[in-house]
Amino acid sequence: MSAKLNVHLQEVPRTFPTFQRPEVLGYYSLNTERQFCDDLSELKYLVPHHRRKRKHNLNYNIEDIVKKDEDVNERLDTILQWILRNAHNLKDDSGTRLRTDFVCFRGLLTMLICTPYETRDDWIICATKWKGTIYLCAFETEDAKRQRLQASEHQKKCMAWGRKFEQHMATARPGGCPDIEQPINEKAEFCVAFQSKLKNHRLLYCAEMDCVKTDTEIKDLKELQKTEFVEIKTSRIITHPGQYRSLKRFKFMKWWAQSFLVNINCIICGFRNDEGVVEEVREYMVPELAKTSKDTWNAAAGLNFCETFLDFVKNTVKEESLEVVWKFDWGPNRDVCGVKLTGITDFSILPLWYTDNLILSAS
Image (tube, rainbow, N blue to C red; front, side, top):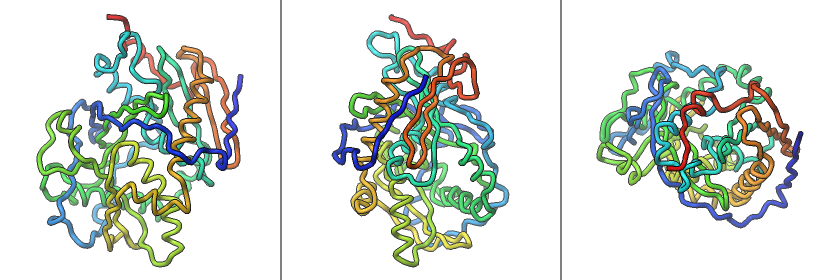
């Protein structure tokens, strides 16, 4: 069985769809061994202005970076672990299902929002419906895998510099100094769970968050809900107008989508040279990214495509079975195509340790 979604950019509405302000539901940490921790241990705080340097050399200890195993697809495992620990707060009034239509990572929603303007990269998204909720998981495409394996040393350095700049701009305690002596460990993350609604689609998604902007230590969920999150980015220094157009075209939309989905208003970007030295630090207000880039992309069109895709998935994925997965794939100048897979395959999403332990029944 198969399904097809044909959407042309010129047909996507340019008016904003209804989008509910995202609400923080909870958090978790992944430690330096990539173990799930139901705590705030990996939360980072933005370094205050008076402690920031004018320039940042991002090369210190860069060769000792501890990388994630990118050949391992964790699927939705960390979200599922968080849901198991918090299911009592996530049920709807009937108690028989979660209070959401979709579960996924923010990165998947960001990818969908950017799709109408994507000209290079393809994607694969798989979906399984279980007890009224559709679980969405992105999988690496062959093209993406080939690009990752063939990445040049300079491309790898650019990615490492981005993580190193985060280390320069964030600290383990409010008002503290960053510890740039420690090698970067990509396995460690602080993640936040959000709920929102895009038109008629209720969403539950998790996102890795760079840091918070506050002078006081965050000790619990209520305090985290009141604080301001900040996103940290790097980009190559701009030396001519063409580079600025490229920045708007290829980065600003992704930055905007990532931040919009999690209530971030401020992005701090370090502009570095080709030797890994940040020569200028700029702050961008997220709403301004869409305004300054309106000649290149339209934020409402991105959200409308995302809503259209979710509607398509909801109307396609009807079977409630752990052994039924719908595999949707898309590429530039191609329609979204869905294929129904049955049985246990490489694209299966939900593990038995989750489905056997998530108790949903009327109370």
